Picture (cartoon, rainbow, N blue to C red):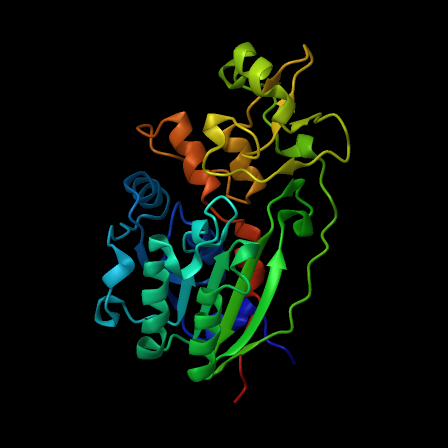
Length: 308
């Protein structure tokens, strides 16, 4: 009989996890339902850390991971890593391992063999696949005898009307095994389900900006049953081309998607909140750097406790 993830982690006596590049805590959000205790989180963003502490009662360590030593990493069965995507993105010119922002992730890869967590999960953009950093990760995992699976997931796989494809690497060793991943096919939910009933007028895009950049915007009619939004990036608050969709207004204008709406689309719980000190642009920036909570839950469900 196959063992469910919740049973497996319960049998493992409340698995402990470390969340690297923790942001606003998508992993911590998913871990809540699976009896996983996040014992440490690392992120250099002060605003992200304030948000994380408010929602999860844990103070992330504002530590530069470029030189983090394995002795500074708490003992844990699970590692979650969501490193900067710029080294592997078109906007970042795909500098790969030559990009200074890849140094922290490369350092963590070196620490895997010294700490040997039972399982680890990595999230990044599709451009990560085939990169030199990706190659180094796979080589280290093979050397340490991890079982590995890789899968591409998008919110649309979970019935969410938002396209935000991401690549994930899941690895396990010792008493943990991996299920063969099957791409989920949840029933589609209409966009209106995630939108505010009475959106704030402050979200309306100024006429000057619409006239100047309107042709480059992805403006979505939420009344259309098959409507979907495109990926929100950390630059969404600037409201420029390819940073995320806008919602069409009856008067012919358009509005930005509110942070609470994006939170719902990413699967954060209704009581998730930002500190009052974080501005509206700051909230968009943090959400643009976050991860789909449903995808994290799905990945954790690939882990099983071996009967051996």
